Length: 222
Image 1 (tube, one colour):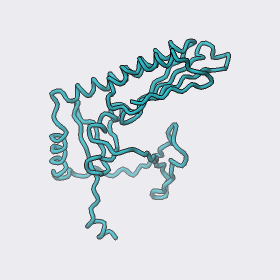
Image 2: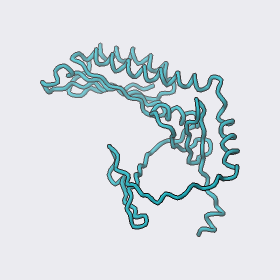
Image 3: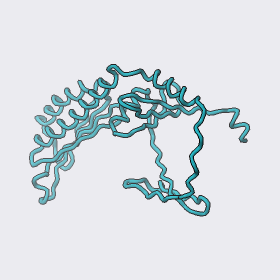
């Protein structure tokens, strides 16, 4: 794992650098597949921030991004706090993996069960709801992410976000889903190159949905 140490408005001493390298060994043991770690040591010049004038930000690239930061009046204390937080995040991720794979059905069994349910006759459709509700733009939305679309003469807001991501396996996608705390996670399957989504089911079981183009249906539509 490459470790990059950057000082902002300050110079990082050799003693501090050695402390960072020593402490990051624990991070590497918990995330052996991590490729890079960035440690930013920031000195705040604002006198009003004297109690938090030293801030340390740690970012670990481990098939996704794990980040922690802390501030104090001493940079060694700030680093120790930030490092403890990043270690705790990685430990929880490791425990989730161990719990998930212990006495739980395999993903293949979950997918087979979901496919069987999908092939069952569709239930009677529920009555249509003609009510249309507006969806407000969410905090941190990128510019142009909210699009007004008329539906029966009534505009609704559609939220759209585009992310760049490298292909990953189903197991890696589940780890990322648990890391961000969502109920589903969209990704490109490294094994099939298909757009896919993993989702949480009851307990610690998961499902996966893949989208494959139907060439015949596309020709008929055209």
